[in-house]
Length: 68
Image (cartoon, rainbow, N blue to C red; front, side, top):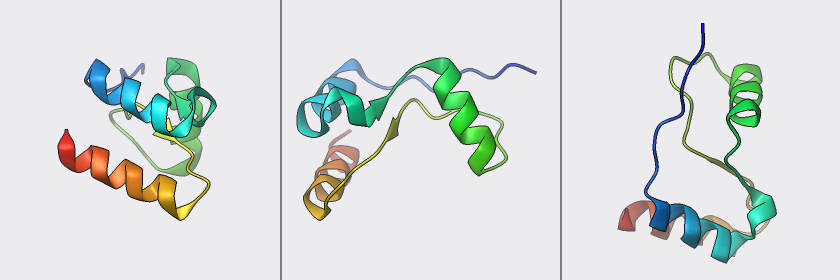
């Protein structure tokens, strides 16, 4: 069964990439599916997976989540 990722606002993706770096924001469908499948059972894929490396990056993600 093939799943599709949930759409995210383009502005959110742009801000995540600007604050974390493009290398820490995964958007590719195949990578989302593999990562999600190995972590948790799913029916829908996330729109993105982020890999913060500091407390400040986690705080930035939370602020963006609240904003969007």
